[in-house]
Length: 290
Ligand SMILES: Cc1cc2nc3c(=O)[nH]c(=O)nc-3n(C[C@H](O)[C@H](O)[C@H](O)COP(=O)(O)OP(=O)(O)OC[C@H]3O[C@@H](n4cnc5c(N)ncnc54)[C@H](O)[C@@H]3O)c2cc1C
Image 1 (tube, rainbow, N blue to C red):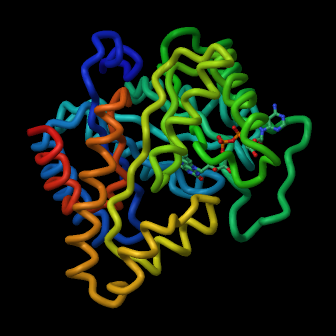
Image 2: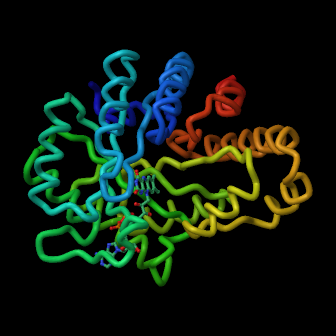
């Protein structure tokens, strides 16, 4: 399959979706239908997340294979390095390579809920940049490697400048592009891109956008990952938080405005956190493409 890094050579904007492996068989069957519908929207790629500590490993890779083989859409496997030893990660990467998957999002991840105090030892990677370097050293250019970026700074990083320097370390160790955490004020993204440019980062920084469909759920998620719920978002969504229909309409409108502004101001594409649903991402995408 084509590498995601190759998509950015002709300055064409990319549109991509992120899915997660469902917990139940019923959810999995539904996801297969969703993948079919999302593929009809002709995305540039579809990614699939990796459960904490590798809990969803087989499902992640099976979903990525399905997207590639059945739908002929470029697909991206997330991979976290917490819990696993370096030897185990090498085995996992060999397995991924044998399956014909050549796009990896190299993440550190977080300790799983059932082992929250896990800390890396000498046989583990401590940070994502070490995983990037390991992939390049052991697999050369076989994989295109993406990494996570945090426009507001990672929640555990003391300041945004330091966080930008850590991001640069991932690029210096072989990462080809960045997909960002969600954000609701585009200025966070623009300032992040500026900080990274000043450090000499030239790779594509792809903004991650979540269409708002459930405000209380979003607030909880945003608090956990350190994304600011802006005053504008509060003003629009708090009064309608118990009305899912109104929230969906407002969420679609908000995301269209956010994406149009990003694309107009130089973002290389949009990565949609579509939460295993076709709507409203389908409408948003059709509107911003038109
Ligand atoms: C696009 C995207 C996709 C994601 N997909 C998944 C997924 O599939 N599964 C999952 O479990 N999680 C996922 N996450 C969440 C991610 O795993 C967590 O945010 C995790 O806490 C950080 O991972 P990282 O790869 O950014 O780690 P790192 O880049 O290693 O950073 C982790 C922390 O260490 C700090 N740091 C980095 N380098 C250094 C250094 N050299 N010295 C000192 N400190 C340093 C950083 O500032 C940060 O605080 C995703 C996040 C994003 C934005």
